[in-house]
Amino acid sequence: MVEKGQKITLEITDMSDLGQGIGRTDGLAVFVDGAVKGDKAEAEITKVKKRYAIAEMTSLIEPSKHRIEAECPYFAECGGCSLSGVDYEGQLELKEEQLRQKLIRLGGIEDPVIEKIAAMECESKAGPVRFRNKAVLSIGPGGKVGFVQAKTNRVYDCSECLIQTDAAMAAAEALRRFLAEEQITVWNPKKGKGLMRQMIVKTAFGSGEVMVVLVINGKEIPGIEKLVGYLDDSIYEAGYSLESVILNINKDKNGPAMGDKCITVAGKNTIIDKAGGLKFEISPRSFYQTNPAQMITLYDKAREFAGLTGNETILDLYCGTGTIGLWCVDKAGFVIGIESEKQAILDANRNAVINGITNAAYICGKAEVELKKIIERKTPEHESKDGPDFKTQLAERARNATVAFVDPPRAGCDPALLDAIADSAVERIVYVSCDPATLARDIKILTGKGFRFIKAAPVDMFPRSTHCEVVVSMSRGGSRL
Image (tube, rainbow, N blue to C red):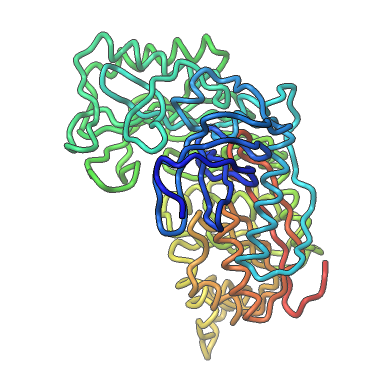
């Protein structure tokens, strides 16, 4: 029986999302702070639960071959890059194996076919740097601008972050300077008071344009003109161009990170990124892949798995701003995108327009509701002299769609959507996921509805963390692509 205060010796065989090493003793999983996969360590139990225990490493008996000294000086305090103590080769091996185990245990797939993980090029042993195009910076007491420490609500002040762009770090320093000079209150999550909540910096790698979104609990920021000036100067010195400054109003204490209302206080409403010969408008609330280099790898793999011949109608479900469908539309007949976020649908339509794409249409609403609705739409008994109206044409296309792209949030697909896909004419599913666990769960449901898992292709979108993006190919009836 494991007890608090007990010292044990463990072989570390896995790692958690928070970067804890995982070993087992007497059949109990033990999460060990400070340990990495491959270590042999002595640890002291600090907490015992029914199904697991927490421990701290007291001595390293034999280090893992993948253990390294973290490059980031904030690694121990910040906790954002949980695999900073593991070399890049070890990170990739860990992600492949975690995906494999989830597909086996949660997906019910005995021997899943998994392609070698698509890695990023890098010179550092610890992994790539400056690859994220979006920084979400929290604001804390004393003018702190940084990241919320793991397992706490405290903001850790980071003047440097290896995975963020120079533009984001320059914007953070400009905000620190402004807060030091002005009497501006900062958000207290426990009390639900204070003006400044977060600063989000979006950097378009393909154009060099930058958007700064200031999330506030109020109507305005006193002295905003001074802050805009500081931001403009700092971002320019970092080699980028500040094109948009947005106020996002969020007065909800327990709600999402951003509110619904956005006010443009300087520059444009959106910025433009360029990738793969396409232009994409990025708005304050829209989702856009945070690793633009690997986005190309991810979308190319999705297009490959779709097996397009040029005539297919594609259902792009949870389409966001339409990026995956637009990436593939030149190889398809038509794309129908469905997304519940209104602003994302507006962005998707704009992205189609600015790229001269006419064989794509977008619907705002919950994917599980709108897909069923459009497929069940009845064709009018008597057509007008001009032929079927647009909605009728769209319904006919949707009923004949043979390929579905599914790119849900981390929670995975709504079960009703999986039912709707199974009831449709879709023959091939390309599932893009940022959470292998919910992916595996949904795969198991789909296999029970007549689809077969073909293969998975992991793409390392999030180096230095345990997170991994995965593209999966599924086919109705089981034929391999």
